[in-house]
Image (cartoon, rainbow, N blue to C red; front, side, top):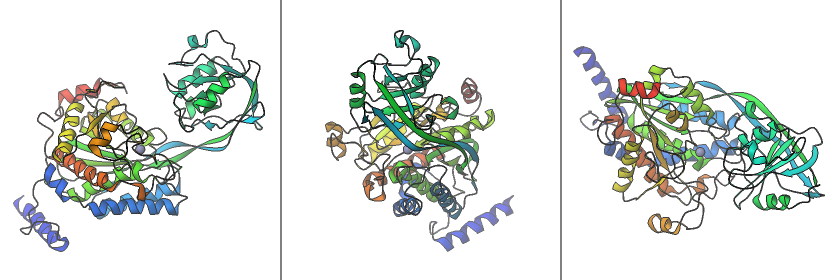
Length: 489
Ligand SMILES: [Zn+2]
């Protein structure tokens, strides 16, 4: 044993000399939060964003799942991890990709702007002409049959308001009552929204969204008005890949897992959403190396198909058996950490804000405290952001795995108080470029990116060293296995 150990040490010394990465005495310091935060190469992280922008530029301006731009993004991340010494897996999963060829709505000779909801079936060629039947507006408009107030919607185009339940449910209720199609009117004054029916299996009737203003105008139309809806769409199955890499050292029964989605939306290059999270994880992976002196193993994940409904992360979690789930101590998620008008948010794992969804699995509160403390130490006072599961941590918390993460904001509006404490512009979105062609390298807030890259490395280093203490998570063994087993699969 001793001889073997000496041999490995000798190898490390040589590597250290060649790369110049180690201390002069050739012994790396054990991993911890401050050490990993200090070791990250911020220039290299920005270089990753430059490369992801270049990849989008060379592939129709985007890196969306099912496109060559996504495949090139996978190749890039695999190459970077391999350069850092990692063995890399790219497990495959199947995803339905959705394309809109035509979307039109005509009412009384006038064109009304409309967007097809994701996975919406096509109307017959030439469109569907039918009477328009608004269902009662309000909180949960069209969310259940009772809310239809006895209306006859057979063969009609139903108009419901957004809110109260997912689009999928509104569509199902309308389909069950015999509607030919559904329009969902926004409940907020904004540009036309996108949305999804969740997947091909749930999509039953042509479904599209209109703005709040147009929705109100349609509600005011005469009872007898006919509308013509034309949706020409295709849904295709594609094979895509996640990218997974894990340290060789550390307890692989107490894996500290960190993930970021690698796909963009089809509308833009996705440099903040989510090149920023990808760059942050690559920075930590490079600083950590494949064989750190760490207590716990660290596993990095780069997810595909987040933007079409967390498909890559869901496939990954679904593919783990009970033992493999119990091996994951915690999951950290980073989705947008360089927003143009940045906010500083920590996922509200303990539901202390009492907003939206409830708390996460046991241990999520500790992760929230840990990241709050890390940001406070660097002079940033973060706010909470609802733990709603609408990024890749969703499948992990659904499997009873504690989770947390950082976020610099998307299409929510920065308040005056937030602008005072963080800088930037009040009454403006945190990322005014969210899900658009403008989500480019130039729009990234470099200071926010750097603060988050360091904070993320700090968190990963801290949990790699220890998952104990007040900000720790339930240990391996019975407690964790029970928590996971209680979770419906
Ligand atoms: Zn995202």
